[in-house]
Image (cartoon, rainbow, N blue to C red; front, side, top):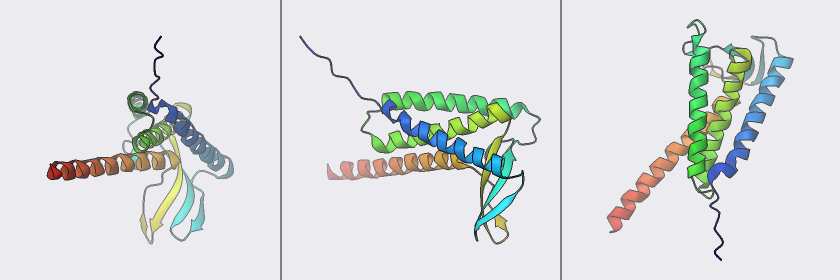
Length: 170
């Protein structure tokens, strides 16, 4: 009798997406319950907590589009989330770097999707600036997405470099 081997997939990393999602929602809940819209509290000389609502996408793109963008960006988030879950399923569990990246992006996408569905806007509060230059206000979901994307870019660069070195050794 042959016992089949079970291939462990990247889906075991979904716990990280859930944690990223919970932390994102928790911080947003804190801001909504302790701040008035537009209120800002200085944390560091270059960083504030500032409660803002984003009706658009990154950097408030399409914020004044009339409401359809809520569903458009929601559809994008659902599609990307489905694709990320598929990729996690295709990956071996021990491909740590890419699985962590996918899970972070998934957690961030779901955090912002939740806001869009429940509120019609995304709750932002992380405000970075230098003197009179202000970066658009963002949230932890955006941070998870950016960290995950940066990890995937670094992984692609490293794999490309390793492929070139391997072909030079032949």
